[in-house]
Image (cartoon, rainbow, N blue to C red; front, side, top):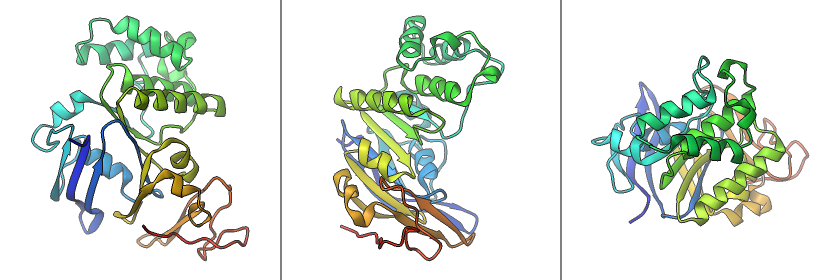
Length: 265
């Protein structure tokens, strides 16, 4: 049984269709990436799969559980790292993670806190209130809360945001080790190089529609190093930077003058 299955999953906000007819299968023990610019529907997809939002059409199964009828069961079984969410400002990391342990009924939470604080290098900040932590330290605490209960499946929205390059590599190592142990990672990102470096397979999401799924090795092709999409409703241009570092300009061509086109498979 796949870790995640969706069939025609659709979500609307008024006249805006944030996600349209998403049909997807993610195998257990894989590291799957949802790649697309801001506003493409990545965060909406994670919200639907974790029972935080209800679809307008379609269905999903997460570890065999329906997130609409059993949202608390899904959220109890998985780890979730939302984008740009911090621990409560008035709690220390230790206090916050103990609260997470109480909610998840973990008897050995102090041992787990010590382990993850060491692995993510925030031991010295364990007893500092979150309001006084740096953005990177707060991100490490939130990563810890997603993994502290040893879930079989973790959802991560932009896992490397606010982290310095050294810690980014440490987090990548942790994600690879977690997957190597037979667990599943579902991550969203708007960086091609992150998806290519971390993932087994990638789905390209654009305007709420799944345009392509492919092996992450295909993202190293020149045609996918820069992924361009124009956000129609706002008229703004969103860019996903590839490992070349070049950005696509407003005419849909890379700013360095080279050619770029997205191909489907």
